[in-house]
Length: 350
Image (cartoon, rainbow, N blue to C red):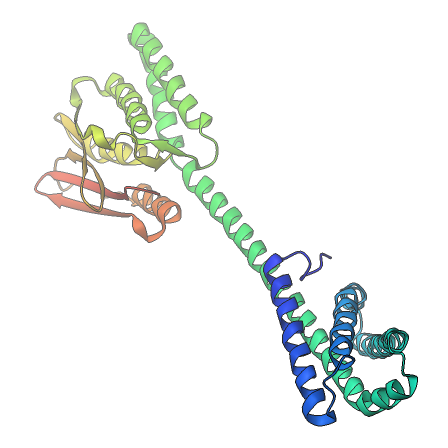
């Protein structure tokens, strides 16, 4: 496990600032309580706190080992007590030996050491406890960070899976109808059948070439829609026509792949299938201050035999918009007289 202080520059700076503040506090304490403020108390403080800081930094490695997973609580407590005893004893011994070798007056050092010993022991215990609490905080923050990363990854995988599932529901109905039409045209009009097969292969290639939910430009989506409408025009002939009113400034807008195809499919299903006359599907794209509006509309015949759809196609498109853009995009439907419209409101930037 990486050291939480040494691997982070900001934490390391804060770490040494805290020790400097503690050292300044000890110098003042020695002066006001013990009356020491001389050539020994200042080096003593700096040296003792440097030794403590190095030992505390080293403490992380046995500490992280003690707190590994599946370790029983009583073993952790026992190990921390042993580690604390070793830490405090080691810091006192190293500090005493170093200071004693520096001072030339052993008698003065003996009096000085004995008078400050209770404070040293208490300060070492306090610093050790503080270090243990701090390291537990680092462990908790690390686990929280890992948990958030796992949740984000899981959410991303879930989102990707849901998007793939929604996308997989787009093509089968259209594909089956197209293949049936090709089968019929091979007998009545082989040339039209050949043209339909070519366009159908290009259409399917477009869908398969876009892996996962990669964003594509509106230009590519409109080109794919033209393939789709051309295929359907071969099936329905003069009964189906299309019109476009596209703001060229919007052609680079990024969209989820094949997000518009279900809207065309609905227009044909509830327009051409349910009408005896001709049906025109209109595509309008315009840019506003807040978003890009994409409207696909078709005329239809209102009759008692008109079959209302299940709404699956529109629901899938709405769900994909929500997953791709969050709450920044929306879908609105409207029905005026004999014209049904679906409008997508897409943010300028994703």
